[in-house]
Image (cartoon, rainbow, N blue to C red; front, side, top):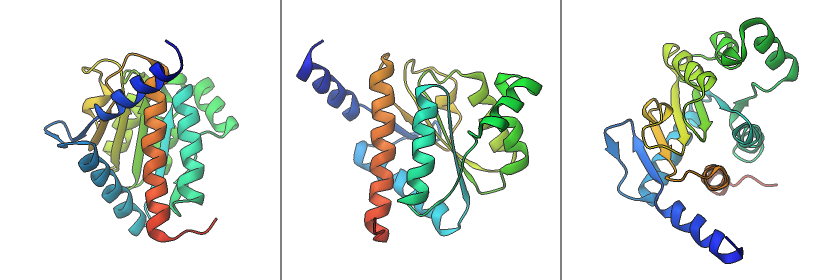
Length: 193
């Protein structure tokens, strides 16, 4: 696939993104889904709840990037779970599947917001982290792709699903949507860079 063809496919996939409120109510279109996401992030910003982004691999890069952007540009109370000592300690002492859930047991409070980014939607450490967040009565937004039947897609208060089996497409769209949200927050709040 060359040049423009890849971008055309990316744009086509973007317009087919599904944004769900829970598992029962699908937003009518992309704009309605963005409004729902924006309202949710603004509600958490107003209450000054903490915001955690989690993901593995490329999704970890998105999570780390968004932790910085939502703090600096969005003025939100973000918290990183990517400190090397903490991550390696959790992996070594409890196993990789607990690298997010164990620290979240200590850090996450009721009404915090967890954004779980997982292309496959089947990563054990992401599933455990969401379960921990829910046990703490935190809100969860998921970003997934690949199979429509992936596990994580059914776990969030809001679930964003990219209908593609390509990592590059899924990760690019996840990043684009999150960047759109933080840019919209920045525009509304008038943050000066």
